Amino acid sequence: MVEPVAAFSRIGEENAFAVLARAGALAAEGRDIINLGIGQPDFPTPPHIVEAAIKALRDGHHGYTEATGIKVLREAVAGDIEKRLSIAVSPGNVLIVPGGKVTMFAAILMFGEPGVDILYPDPGFPIYRSMIEFTGARPVPIPIREENGFAFSGEETLSLMTDKTRLIILNSPANPTGGVTPQHEIDTLVAGLERFPKAAILSDEIYGQMTFDGLKHQSLLDYPSIRERVILLDGWSKTYAMTGWRLGYSIWPDNLYDAARKLAVNSYSCVNAAAQWAGLAALQGPQDAVADMMAAFDKRRHIVVEGLNALPGVSCPMPKGAFYAFPNITGTGWQAKPLASALLEDAGVALIGGPDFGIWGEGYLRVSYANSAENIERALERMSGFLTRKAA
Ligand code: PLP
Image 1: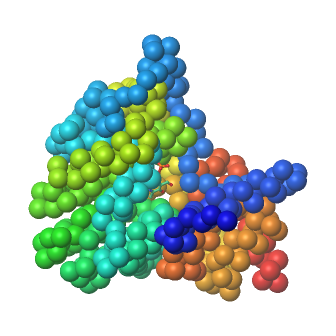
Image 2 (image 1 turned 180 degrees about the vertical axis):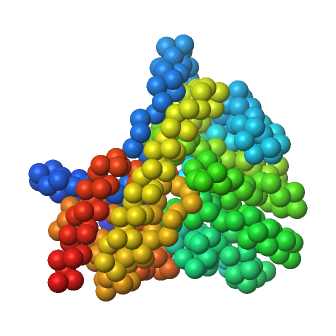
């Protein structure tokens, strides 16, 4: 028998995919399953973006592109950041990648090795910890607390840093909590980072355009004192409902860019050419579909939070971004994973237990409202029936 090297015994995965597989299996048996487990918009990609990809194929864009991505797209990304966030970015620092995940893969590979620490949000996107462990670095969780509005704390993050810290991963707006970190916490963190000049920062801003109540997104790129060590992770998946296209981008500081480019050359060569032309149409075309999608998410956000707060033993703060609610279920007497599993098996509602996002996720469920208002209301009714029956 042949076996992979030891590092592969430490690599993890996303449990959400296991829940989705189980939900799919139950649906295939004829059960009516409502899916609030999924981390992707339920809207189709806007038609003008789809058309741009079809046109690119018809126009003969069938070959490799530059490993870094087509020039017009890198320029458009820089222009988009300038327009949205008033931050100057050179197209020469933009790398087009096959999905947001690829940037975390590259950044963690670049800084992770035995003997160093990497900080990451917990609860947080499970791939951060998985990849940190893969490299042999020590994963150091940054607790993301409900009492802090599910924002990371600048002070607490600094208190976890030592001269061994090589990378800090931050995510706002956040998966799985919907938390948005306010500017003062970021200011505190950035001021303290001057004491740790060897620590790079990976800022996962893939939900950066998904904030509510007029809240302005605060990018880590906006701090000149750390600009030379910030890696920005962003992409099209969530903003433009393009998860299946596998298209993302990163902004790398000058001295890291070439290492990231070489990883591209050594793995995927370049991103699917038609997807890149679609990405260009997304940035340059009308943005009403993005606004419409956010208006729909906002409506559902209120429905879901109101409904969750009406459930026995459940309380849920109003999320400020992304499309997830993160209700506290400690009052139900259940542990999170058994409750998620019982809700799927008994009530036909798929959602994810908080511990699938890290130890600090115990006592919570992740409820994605990337589903119709009608289905969300049906799911809440089922959850109410289940919890009332179990409490009786
Ligand atoms: N970062 C966060 C916080 C996410 O939630 C996700 C996807 O769920 C990603 C990155 C990965 O995005 P992509 O599908 O573009 O790889």
